[in-house]
Length: 498
Ligand SMILES: [Zn+2]
Image 1 (spheres, rainbow, N blue to C red):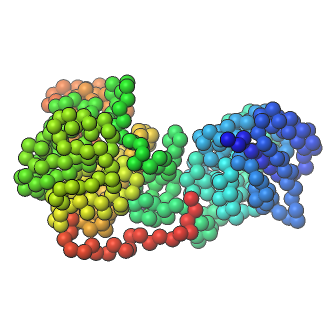
Image 2 (cartoon, rainbow, N blue to C red; image 1 turned 60 degrees about the vertical axis):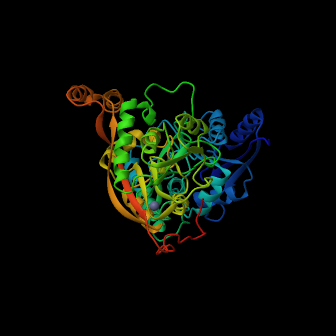
Image 3 (cartoon, rainbow, N blue to C red; image 1 turned 90 degrees about the vertical axis):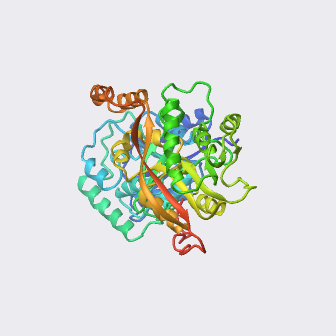
């Protein structure tokens, strides 16, 4: 493996008498780290501003990490090493230093632009080479607003940004102040509105380019589409065919792992399965052939196999094996890899598994192929437009994306189905049985203040209790005949960034 190469850029916007000693100590320090490095001092040529000289410097830099430092170096040297480590470990693509001095006037800027802004008193920033290429390449501003522009674009293109606290009380002139920052922010917004920046990678559901970084979770960024209101992970990571994302078998599963449905008591799971089966009975006749994608603990399969010809697939070998041990016809397969050797299915069910699939369009096309014309799909999924989801979203962000890749809004799901050759039969809230033990834990963990009240109420309610998990249940039928309007949704422009 080649060693880390670091390009250091020192913009000279102001007279810096400390520069020679800075250069010496930076070189000494970098020699001890074992990085390959090059240091460039960038002085302003004929009226070039701060942004201009950094763009020029970055274009010439060859390192895999790009670090911009202050000529006075008002912080300990190992801050540079820390920033490089954050980027090399892939914890972040962009690092903004934050000094000791508070800059309180940023709340307005944060609301206009993005929550993580650089410190106006420090130049110190670091980028991975790919982030630097895109962010500095797309930037337009010349003055101190350049810093704000980079922060804004980092969000637009879904780069992970980390703040690095450094011990510094730099008294250098700010790159942007309250007024100049505001002027730049407005300029940045206007440029974006006029499509001055390249579009980011599009929403995987509706292909809109109106997408933003919504939150940062460990190792990933959650993106939000403002058109279809879905939320999705920026990096899906390894392809779903290779790695079981959900329900991997772990030696010590935490006692109350709330997203794992198998954590609910058996009776609760069975009653949920019976409820789902009741919905299915309205759509298909007895002895029909049905396919369940993602079999979980097999409780739905056991209920369904009594009156239907049941086939299940699950991409986790252990889950498939456990279900087969219960006498069910279950294959270890992904949806794409599944070969149906029997006649086409009368119904396909997906209970909380659609969110784990990387390409919803492919998945629905595949489901359609597996169904008879007029065959039904039963799907339950979180609804990002649901009230329960909205009030708990921020608290549960990392948890929601522990296994899910995309979370859909109900309107996005309806649109997806209709454009994929299905006809919506019904959309309803999905109720599932939860035992009291689970509910007590759930409330205590999330809303501790409400816990005593909820515990008291639970005492008079039946156990297990029918509860809403903020999910919806969609029933759709495969349209007979050729699909209509298949072309419109995939209007792809190849010019997007990232
Ligand atoms: Zn979308």
